Amino acid sequence: MRLFLVLALLIAIAAVIFSFQNAMPIMVYLGIWNFQASLALVLLSTLGIGIVVGILVSLPSALRRSMEISKDERQIDQLQADLNAQLDVVSQQQKRIDNLERHLNTGNAPDV
Image 1 (cartoon, rainbow, N blue to C red):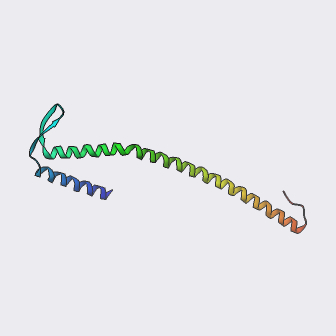
Image 2: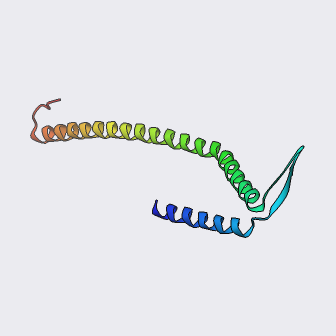
Image 3: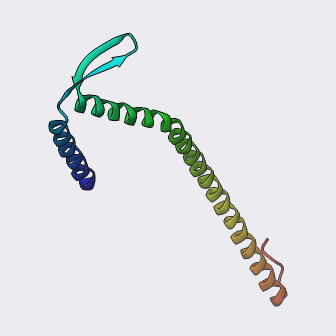
């Protein structure tokens, strides 16, 4: 978190320096509209729009990955529960085998 804050501060300082060095006005033509704005404002706005578009494009993939991870975690929990149940069955069967072997060796009737 601290690293993110330091990086954000460095980027903000770089943007301010960039803005001061590129303050000249330019004409922007956008379809039927045209307006005058500083070069820095146009470039930083374009950068911001590009970042937002990039996030929006990657969002479906991130959501899909998150849903797959959630599904896999549920499957792991279910498999762990199944494994624990099977281990209980094995333990009970091992106790039964031990009991039968003990009674077989002593010649007594088993306690099944």
